[in-house]
Length: 449
Image: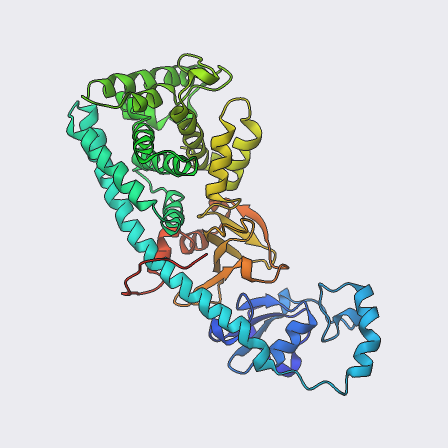
């Protein structure tokens, strides 16, 4: 049954309602929800600038249980209610009627601030997207030149690394870039992977206190780590995710050596970056390729690239049905790779990305779906989320900073993109955020914290 108009006098607990009006005309996180608490019922009865609709098919049968009476909360314990009952009876007549408008003031102000912060973030994301696209285009030329043995390819790559370092100078840039890293586009997988791995390696290098010069060499090795793959025919690369074990082992053994041969033909190619190309498929316990090196035999830079390379591959598998969610990939690295990968680099990556990395699709306990737009550094379990609500306008997106919401509103689980309806997945595409607001305001610093 579709939504039908509802008179405010008919409001009761258990109804699944829709509020037609501005998101800023009420204090609730979304425009459609089931009424579960008496305090929410009282708030709804005091609203003025909204129209009410109800979906009886998604509503509960009417109940008259004591805990459902107006004024109760689904989060309150029975013992607490009993203890307070006498106080309520004694003071009921002396209390002034609740001022609904005053009660709504703080939540409404918070909504406005979150909305404004998202506008700033959206504009900032546009800036970072433009720079990222420039880096991506230059990366194609750099790789082509290096493969062809042209020294200018190294110079272009060094410029790219410098641009990435500048891009990652501020934490707001890092958060915006992480959103874009999480949304690879078809047909550019190789170059996205190279740029993603380079960016993530830089973040770890910064966190571990590397110098600018050290980070430049780390990022250069990360950028070219898979360049040897281009010695293979395109048909082979298309099958990379579906190779049999024997063929895959040969591929992992040979493409690093091909990459070293390419890099060593370029004058002044840093040996530290060459080591990354050579060793990025090695493993700390000696089970890697091509040489079975162990712990101290592997360069620190290669140990970092080993981690971010695998993370990006887990999230962007050639077969999309086998891709892991970012949170799953981080968990896999931390739990399953203790013997094979450098734990310091894994912990640093988790610290940079958060429990729910930007770009993660999540399901909340209010039955809503959203995409993480930014990590709250001080509370990584409660990020900033752009919500999908079928009854809200894209011109007025719902933005929730969970760190500022009631603790009862929580993330239940992360979601694979393939598990969402196509129109929801498209609405929550990180790059689509750029088009949510027409904004010509120059942005210097994003304020989503």
